[in-house]
Image 1 (cartoon, rainbow, N blue to C red):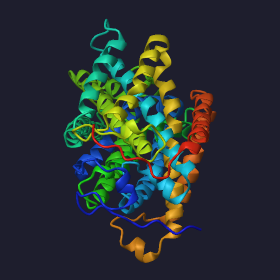
Image 2 (cartoon, rainbow, N blue to C red):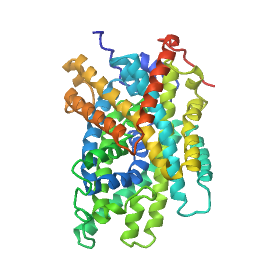
Image 3 (cartoon, rainbow, N blue to C red):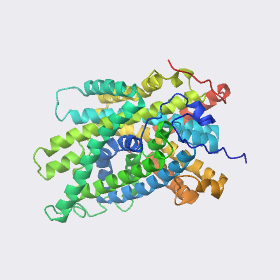
Image 4 (cartoon, rainbow, N blue to C red):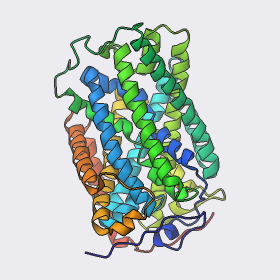
Length: 470
């Protein structure tokens, strides 16, 4: 077995003299723990919860709560594994770098390339969702108009410095986070006070679609938690290694409270068979409890959530393709930075999912959201699988003294990652088997990754040329 790579946690804003940091030279270390967490929260709390929760409720009814509890555990294993690895090797390439170091070049490549494809498509999903929300106010305006307008705004934000980007994303995420927390508190108070009759056993009982329905809905629940891995990507531009443990724990606690709490309240106040994907169940719920103007306010919040999710996704996707370029797997131009320290070409090419969104709203508007989720899920899951496998290898190759020196450690160690790997694999297989999802798009995505790796491998340089500033 080859020797384990040295641990190089970032101690200051200066670029350290190790291969990981050298490959990412030029990025600005400006993100605080709060901003790092909000990038991950912003990338997660978007269509997954605010629109995708309706799809989970459709297929499992109230039992979807169990799906989200299981997804929260999976999320914990992934967050802890990534947090430990990120403390040892902070990098914008994140799980791709960990795959390179602890597995092999194929794992590192498909983690970054697959995740980039998934993110690019997820950007399209967020754009479709934003257009859906705008149609409630402006039914006469074609959806593609909103997609073009919002895309232009988000590109401007992402082409600025990471510090400026972090501030914008922090406040966009805070708007939706504060509103959802308020929604959970208000809904819980209404249920506890008896003002609303709990709907958990109405309309066919807790398992109206059968005992196996939570497993079917697990796909949507896991997709909703997708975004926790983004906190590891931000470590490549964090202020110091001290920010990483706080950011990881903040991300996990916030997402778990929001997702599980929101589903408990949603399914308590609203009959599950009123849910769908043409309107956020949050908006439907506020209309159900007859709070004046609340549905309009909530529609604004979920619009903000979709835009925040797209904003975070563009950021992370651009860092993935940037990392591929800096390690020789993608054209060197994509590794160049503008005067603000933003990988401008990587940002632009990572926005190609917007074109898919435009195509879908023009030719398949009724199924656009589900098509985008089905295609994006495979890329996201590959990053989780590589992260967990890399963590298992990391734990096997590290001494107790080395592990004790890390500021964040996974409580369950490699066994937690083994269990998480198993559960994530089940979710992936379920995704491919469930009729709503597109088995062929997932297999096609994987086939494209394998083929592109085979084509790029002979031309790959172990030490890629380091492009400078534009």
